[in-house]
Length: 93
Image (tube, rainbow, N blue to C red; front, side):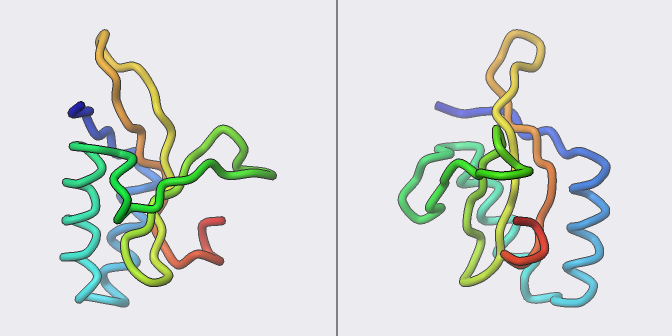
């Protein structure tokens, strides 16, 4: 099931900042977002619910320690994914 990806302003800022510091990560992030839109629970993504202050959010792996945090939402009558943040595990979780 394909979903729409909605990039929050915080996600855009975090992605720009992260890619500026780690240019090779741009490809991994792009590939992960493509896969996330196609199948949010693909085994390669290791998608899981978050706890604590991020309860209600989900995270997917975009590399060894790189995570994308998001929420499932509805947008114009369709299922969508609201991208909230991207960064190293300790930075976003």
